[in-house]
Image 1: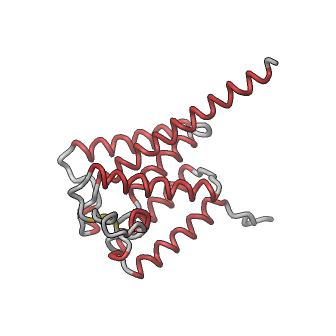
Image 2 (image 1 turned 120 degrees about the vertical axis):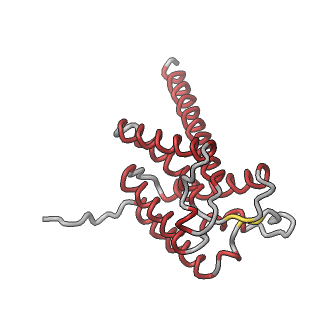
Length: 202
């Protein structure tokens, strides 16, 4: 009787490595890696990436790790390591540049939640082919929370728990970037379908 699958899914391997990296950066000190509005003036380019892999404190860290594990458990995206890596860089760079352009009043930022929201939405979109109900529930929950964070005066974040204000625009930017990826992927598939049909007609 086989109790364990000898092949560990790529999702879990990549996330284990990434969580270990985030833990090491946290131990080194978030101040060295956080996003700062003057990163360009100071030539501290690493901050636009590293900011998303450090946290205000360990509570903040474990909340985001728990959210990521929840995403994997529910959506089971089954992405390759390359795809996971590209998503990390895409969301980190995208959110940081949007901060620079649209949030000039933001002095500093740390946290994985912006990337996490984007990952969650993309995983839900991929899940739609396998389990439409769960995927729709996830998508609606994510979009609803984003809308409430942007429009409601209620505190819908974990700011009280982590002892620091939550930058909800990071969540919004993560979802916007995820939608752009989904649209781009759809256009590529449509273009590929048209090319294949054209070849068949010859």
